Image: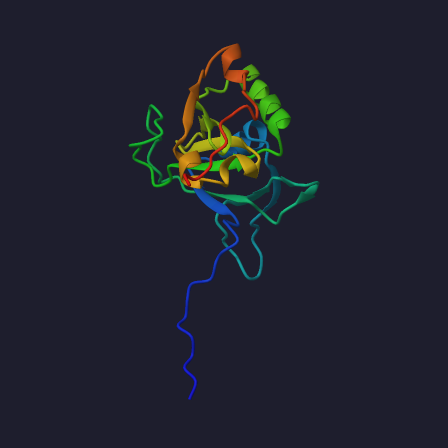
Length: 192
């Protein structure tokens, strides 16, 4: 008699989408479309199978010229507490520390940073990590939002742990907040 192999967890491909509870869906819609740049692709409507749907909208980024069914959804929940007055990367009284949004390349990311700075969006934190270069902002509900571009795989894949632990703080105001070292960063290799 042959024994069945021990069941193991499958390896997921990644996060498919995230759903956020928000206090005011109109305010959050403006943030996710006008500030971050997502496009609304749908919303729940009343119908025979759903007579009283919650206020819920769905958003997609650009997937090489195509839309996804959704990367992000917002559900209005007016019972949420107000966001913390000051944002911090760690120690916030929020269930979600932050979520990360990837831009296709360095140029589009830098262009988006300039757009945000022009609009007066507060840059909470600017960091060049070992695998991404990132800007952290916050949404109207207090959620941290990381806007990033990824460095080439060859930079970080040799020692992911070292790349994760590398962080060089950058200015959050003025022209310095829009400067980027590009790919002029250390290449992480495991010790041999």
